[in-house]
Length: 93
Image (tube, rainbow, N blue to C red; front, side, top):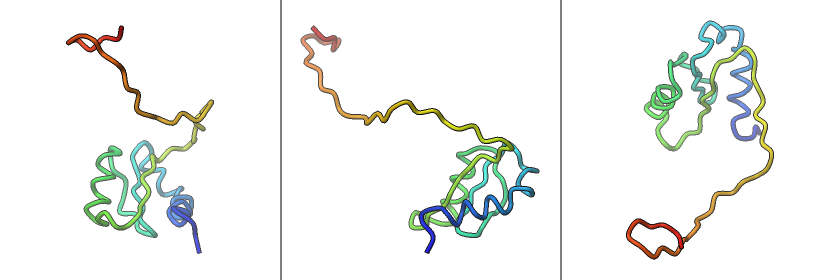
């Protein structure tokens, strides 16, 4: 059994030579389905949600010849910070 999105990544890699004609566009792959590149991430996302609904997983990936790795120096977990404010403008004292 494949893990999350492994099927989609394998399809992306298999189709990569053909996908290069859509370089710079976005591929939205669900299982083995690839309906074509979209101009923006948002367009690809909307098209897949229309086709798949909310219950089916899919992958949206920019079609690039060279993938640049992201450099993440540390894990930062967002959290709520509460401030005590003493005036109407909300500045700290």
